[in-house]
Structure formats: structure tokens, C-alpha cells
Length: 96
Image (cartoon, rainbow, N blue to C red; front, side, top):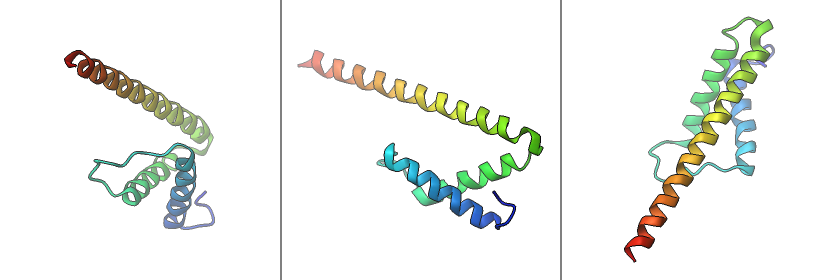
């Protein structure tokens, strides 16, 4: 990705693509003391550093492993949130 463009341009392209994905699965930024654009740019730069820090022959495997780890992490966090919401709703129902 960074072969014919600068790192800054590559970060911008990754941020743009990632935000397009967010349209279908939006992130709730409410209550977070973070700037969305800053977080996207920081993560995109980290991804570029990680992927170009490994030999080209391993990049696809590293990318797939990283995506799998992030999907599992996201899934488990969503499950925890659902469990907490159920517990919260059950507790408020018990008080009624």
C-alpha cells in the first residue's frame, strides 16, 4: 500500500476505508473522551508500522491473524456488554 504513496497518504486511505466500514457497524463514541479522527489515524499508523515491520512473505498471515484476533476481541466485548445489560435490567426489574 505504501509503495507509491507516502505513509501519511497511506494512513489517510486506511482511515477512509475503515470509516466506510463503520457506516454499516457504527462505533458508539458516546462517553469516550477520545477524538474519533485521532484514534483512527493512530490505529492506521500502527497497522502500517506492524505490517511493514514483518517480511513480505508473512504479511498476509500476520494480517489475517490480526483481523481474527480483533474480531474475537470485539465479539467477546460485545458479549460482555450484553451480559452486563441483562444483569442491569434484571436488577432494575427485581427492585420494581
